[in-house]
View (cartoon, rainbow, N blue to C red):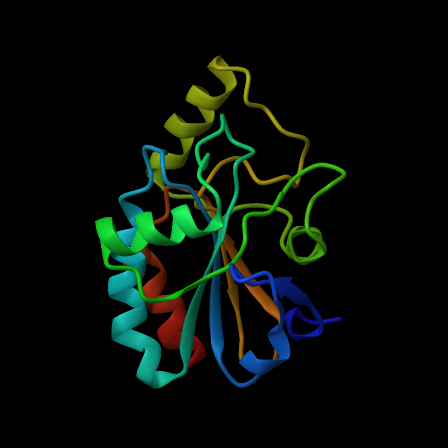
Length: 177
């Protein structure tokens, strides 16, 4: 199986076949609107604009599983992202990324890349999450803005911790191009 074998729900409610992204590098991100990491949307948009003409797509998947930090409906999330961060990359309908109701795409992503690639800020985040009782089973997403890098053939190449910025991922994208 590959990422291109999945379908996901668009904000409009229609099913979107991810096979339309064959031949492109994908950065798949679980996003949120009320999170301390929400300003990462700006960096993700900058990365998208920098690479979209080179065959890179950023795909945002809102999730409300982390302390209810995406409470809006799908259109409200889209409006927030566009108005506050100028987001033009594709966002999809809200979904679950963890637990028994996790979307099949995210179940697959987690199976392919079990652990996050971390940076210096990750340790502090994990400490904070533990202190507020947000501890997940091994392999589950730890928080909003976990990112998955997918190559042109639909293989999951890397998984990044929520604290990884778009700038830190740029070199890995360059390596795939």
